[in-house]
Image (cartoon, rainbow, N blue to C red; front, side, top):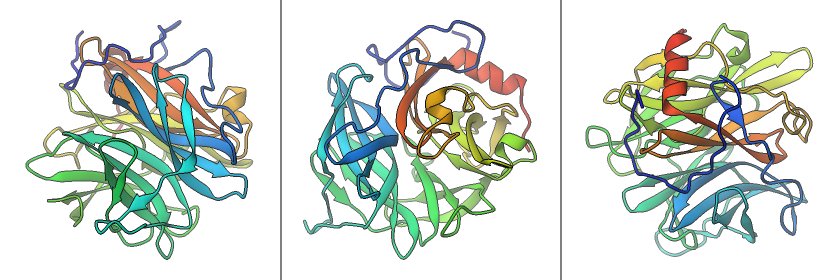
Length: 327
């Protein structure tokens, strides 16, 4: 490998070799989670996956048959075939009291040291972020909201940087905002957040001209933090969500070193173009293997399915650097 991933070896990472020189390629058997996956849930999409035990665990956005999104757990031996609970996650506060929101959606799961942290969007007089911790994906202790409304797409970094926790997010408004940049905040304890800084703006490049939002958990490489994010364009036929990527400075993650002017994936397959919300590719998780440099990306498709794509650290880093355009 020319480039290196700093992290754990993941020998059972889902994988399918490339057929061409695309920076990211789709799993041939997509989507891996289809409609009506469990009782009472019409669609699962925009969900997060992490290694757990000998297999994998996940927190899934399940759109119930009454239309309200809630979060569910799931487990898998291979990261492709999933058993998903039909019971919503029960979040408890530090006193053991149930802490529930009317809706919950678009989770990310971040392993830090010996715990897993779930970050998602929940209602708090408008949509904003929530954080909970778990060790076993059975018991979840929830913190108070880290930000005031409105905020979405919260993604923690997988380790402390200079002794502090960092989180990417996108301040917004109550709806589909006409602005949308990625910011970063820091915390000493995952509960009190501040020192907010701007990271990346939407671009004049069409595929990310309306708004952008952090996606998968950043991957630590020898070049910097590799991030996958979504970009949105407003077309004459509605919004289109695509997947792109950038590399942030390892010690100053508010500093963008490289940013691809091209998307990696845009809606092209039927399961991405046709669904409850058409034309959506929305990355939420990325698994990586330090030994081989392989990366598996989980993304929501058309607000109806979970799909899987692949790349490797050499291919994606070189692509971003070769097609670099910071603004």
